[in-house]
Length: 85
Image (cartoon, rainbow, N blue to C red):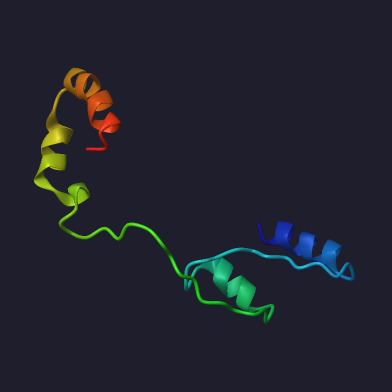
C-alpha cells in the first residue's frame, strides 16, 4: 500500500494539489508513514455514540442470545432490528 501512496504523491508533485490521506489512529503504521512526510497534523474529533461497559454489547442478554438455536434467532432478528433493540 505504501507504493500506491508513493506513486500518487509523485503524480501530484507540481500540480498544486493536496493529498488528504484522512484520519489514522495514533501509533498506526499509516500515521507513522504520514509523519515521515512532515505534513500538517490536525486533531480528530469523533462524534457519535460512546459505548460503555454497561451497553447491550457487553450484557448478559447478548451472551444468552448467542446460545439460542439458529431458528429462534432467525425468527426474532427482524423484529429486534426493526425496533433497534
